[in-house]
Length: 436
Ligand code: 4AD
Ligand code: MG
Image 1: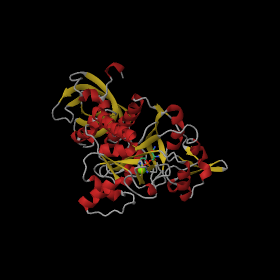
Image 2 (image 1 turned 60 degrees about the vertical axis):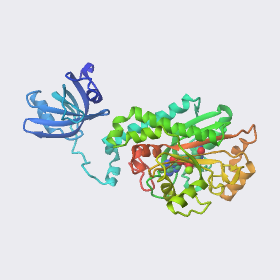
Image 3 (image 1 turned 120 degrees about the vertical axis):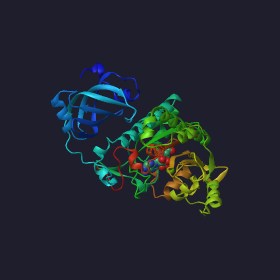
Image 4 (image 1 turned 90 degrees about the vertical axis):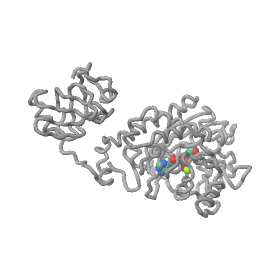
């Protein structure tokens, strides 16, 4: 291959190469032959293009190889770009050279296969156009999160993945044998971040997070990526504002960089743009219950957490994300403080996405009251002495501080409009699956 004429398929689709003699490298996405002509569609990481191979336009052995090569064979193809209104994408390649790098065996994935088989063959399915588009959007989301925080002076800070304590309740901990001891996979970066804000003040991170979720739902993974932030001197309204700005920024970045992927996934770009330009409302938990009662005739007892069914019914009344604050203190994690203005509730928030995607963010101000936290940990059956290091953070120059965590896959699933969170991560781990 001469590097000079080697291009990416998107360069063809952009119309910049019309009439030129070029080469592409990729895989056979579709192929069918009829007499002296082979119609192939090639794909690379940037798109797909139709390539027409006519006997006589290329050396005979290469034509034979083109006839013989099965789906997913890897190829290097030479040809001339020609505008063709009938071709998907508006351009096609008229092939003058067809080199098969590797003749693929019959590909085990054909049309309309069951989701379970696609999961068993995830290592092959991951190259599909659908998953590629989702993963490209995921890459934009991840990049946007880094860009968002760094541009505002947040430092990236890493916490251990092996942790001796719970953060979000003992029932979803994954236990790991640790020499003669036991430890747990991280449920959250938060407790360590709280230590670090006394030196760094504004920090963020994105990392693998583990929860032994016992239920099979379309929203829960056992291993997911959480993007968290923590900041000294900030209170609940400060971080709610940052969370709203962050989600809008992520949407704008996806709209700027992933138009083609949104088309592949059949997403409504205009809807996403409207959301990116909207002010997201903030309501309290109590107000959410009122909406459920008035508009959905649902009686939720004050004090009960909002389950999926309640979140979904509430969100029927919104087309943009909504922040819900002041959940009942009783059902909240031990570090979420009482709201002095409404002591039955906590200074905390969730952000809920529209269209049934549920909670995409959870966060709170952090309690500074060691005694209260001890009582709440004891009530959960925790050994308070394991948290002495954490209480120390309230003993030496304690300051108000707050933070939140974004579920990266929840955000990706919502933006891409996919119905199961499993497709928002390359190799999902759930209660029933940890292979391949
Ligand atoms: O609401 P959560 O449990 O909050 C925390 O872990 C806090 N310690 C974060 C913080 O304040 N730094 O989790 C945060 C978000 C949820 O809103 C949800 O989007 C996502 O993480 N999440 C999950 N995503 C996929 N699968 C799961 N099992 C998830 N559990 C939580
Ligand atoms: Mg939560």
